[in-house]
Length: 292
Image (cartoon, rainbow, N blue to C red; front, side, top):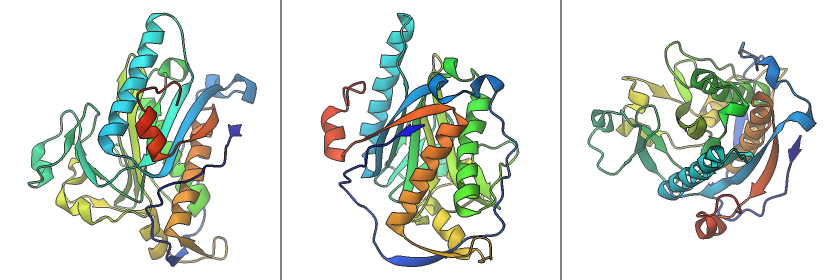
């Protein structure tokens, strides 16, 4: 079950120009991922997850990063006192920014001087408008205490979105983390867990300008290509099953967002409580993650 409050969107960073997009065929459910039997729960058994919804807002990276860490610290204090709070999911966009993981090589920046080095896993990546970023802050004690499972679960969310909503066949690449369509990486993942509380997360290219990725070695993969849902749909052929569809950038982001939270709730077996937040409200109250 998902509890939704219709958001009053503030910033709309997308140009509302209509484009003709085509879905590929046929619809594919490509993953063999399975939730543990213990997680196949009825609605009244599911753990609650508050969704801090800023999916149409451009949130400065430093502010979102510090807010995540404050939520994690709050959760850790509760663990130490044998208490608990519900899980959280922050979903937003960022202004253009480059970030590095804890062990990332600066050689992959190609001379870029302005970036954030973080404590997440993974290599260098780019965030910008048109890319939906999901930061799940989950207590894995109530899910599965296995980071490999967690990474596969995040991939599964995106793969299901691509398959069920856009009829795009996605896959994993052996030995690598993320989601690919052919040789194009559509979603990048970098996470961290402290006392089994997760933060950082997954970035999905929806309508993003991919040019900034050329200034780095994305995810440290030499020669690696990056794709977006918009470009994949534009390149695909129409079919009788999926047909031709028309989205503005704004509509495509909203459609992807709705599918992401739906599939997230299924994969992680949580009941979502949507809490829309304006950028102004977030910047004002971000120091109080429990009460925003």
